[in-house]
Image 1 (tube, one colour):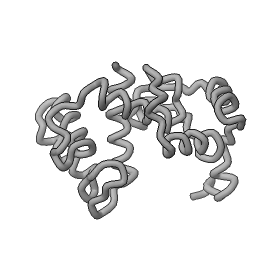
Image 2 (image 1 turned 180 degrees about the vertical axis):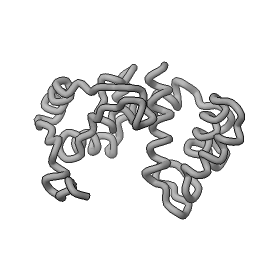
Image 3 (image 1 turned 90 degrees about the vertical axis):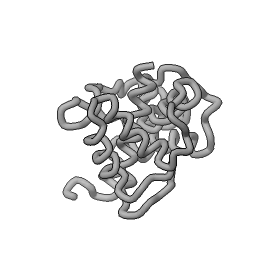
Length: 166
């Protein structure tokens, strides 16, 4: 359950920042304008660490209030964590493989993370909000070759778009 909860929380925090537009959006879930700001404001008001975490999750997963008061581990948290770890290319962190959850977007993203959008990025818990983690690049390459018949191109984005000096 720890990796499931971690993936569930990380997905919400990362996505709120990535889709932090100045207007409401609903790419994945309905969120307010600048959802990370809303999450931070609610976190400060919460009073406890777990309360703050819950407040942030409510902004991303339940902004409209339609999801209810609780996130079910088996039906909501694990499936969303599965998709998060898959998108991140961190397949070894998926606690329980749930292949039936793969839809067309997940399949396409799985291929893209093995070709153009290299995802296995280390984290240290100091300069990011993640638990320290060092990806197993050998396993990641094996996974891409076994699943898609391709080898990852870690520097493709920089080579293609010249991002080294941005």
